[in-house]
Structure formats: structure tokens, C-alpha cells
Image 1 (cartoon, rainbow, N blue to C red):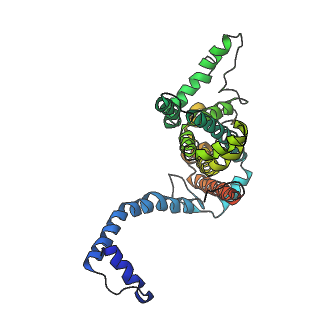
Image 2: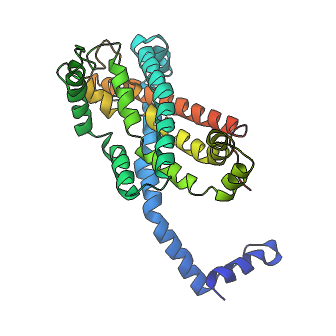
Image 3: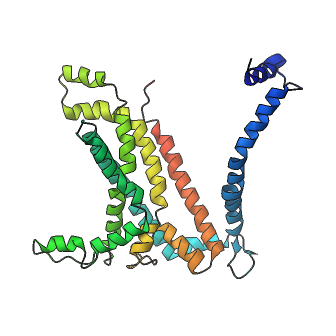
Length: 314
């Protein structure tokens, strides 16, 4: 009998915890704790510790040059009247609401094309996934400035048709749009997940629907979408959280200021400017916890409404 089985029997006997474990069970228990130690230390030192510290700092007036001074809810009250904070909320919500659905739609369409059995699918899959690996890098953000700048590749393309385009990243009406396009372009990660989900749908459903005379569009809406709703939900949660935390693209393209006219002032960018630009770490910590609440609220809302549109094959 294994040590785990022996331990289980001892725990079930008379419904009481055993007073004494065998030497082998104790050895395996110590080994389990030893393997868990790096994870426990990581949670305490890297995650829980800094989170608790930032929670405390959010109630203080603190800069790197002085000790924290307790101010209670003053930082949170200041957020209510901070116009740049309101602008950051507006820009971030607009970015999330537009870019995430577009990204998921394109990811699903491309996944369906690849699921059709194209030759060289491995090459296509790798090529489409590559932007997801490098889309959040500084190099791609700099490249995006070259593409949508006044003399960028996009304007050179428009010049072929006699159209003189503006500097898309320098105009308040179009700067955010370029960042949305950049996020949509990195559809590779959800595409791979959609592709895996499509391959799990039994073909007998499509065959039965075809016998009944259902066309491609009807099969898509009545079979593919319902069967993929758990995958759609999973991708939606991941991309929402990622979009709320977008930072690098806005920092590079706007020059680290949210320019032009704060049209690219993402929430995380404003948090960075307050914390590491103005050295208002207490205020930045309050912003960070507000962001935690926002992301948590959106995630909880999605889980609450998922029972009305997510279907699981039992």
C-alpha cells in the first residue's frame, strides 16, 4: 500500500485525524512542503507582500524622498476630482470596449480559416501567432510610430492614390485608433485557443445539420458558436484583463505623456506618471487599487452573466 493510501485510510478511520503517521508518509509530506516552498515564498515576497505594502501606501502621502504620512482616504477623494484621472478612465474604457471584441472576432475568423485544412498550416499558425509574442514589446511600439507617422508607411501607401494623410499618432482623433489597431493585430494568442476549441467540436453535429439542409451560416450560429462559448468566455476574460493593463504601446507612441491632448493617456500610463514621474507613490498606489477593483468588477460581472450564454457539453 502506498503512503498516500495509508494516510487516507488513517484519516478516514473513525472520522478522526491520525495521531501518528508512518515514516514513509512523513517523508512524503515533508517532500511535498519542500516542493511548495518556492511557490509559497514567491506568493509572500513577490505578490502578497508588495500588494499589502501598496494597500498601506494608498492611505498615505508618500514619495521616495520622505517617509509615508497617513492621510486616510485623501488619495481616493482626490481621484474623484482629478480630471486627468477621469480622462485616463475614459481612454482606457474606449480602448477595451473597441479593441477586445474586434480582436476576438478576427481571431475566431482566422482560426476557422486555418481549421479548414490549409496546406502549410503550421507555417500560417506560427506567422499569425508571432505578433502576440512581440506585440507588447518596445520595438513593435517604435515600429508602429514609423508606420503611422507623418512620413510613415501608411501615408506612403495613401500617397499612391493621391491622398495626403496626417500624422495618425500625433492627431487626437486618430492616435488612440492606432493603438487599437495594434492590439487587434496581436490576435495570435486567442486564435490558437480558438483553433484548439474548433478541433474539439464533434464532426457528427455538422454532418447531421448538413443532412437536415442547414447552410454554413446556420451551422456556424447553431453549432460552432454555442460549442465555442466556453472558449470565447475564456479568451474574453484574458483579453479584458490584458487590455486594462496595456502600457508599453501608449508609453512609447505618446512619448510617455499621453500625448496628443491626453488622447492616449491609458490608466496604467497615468499611474506610472504619478508614481515615477511626480513621485506621488501614495496616490499611484490608490490608483492601482482602484484598477484592481475595476478589473475584479468586470471579471465578476462576466462570470455572473456567463450562465446565460456560456454552454458546457456535459
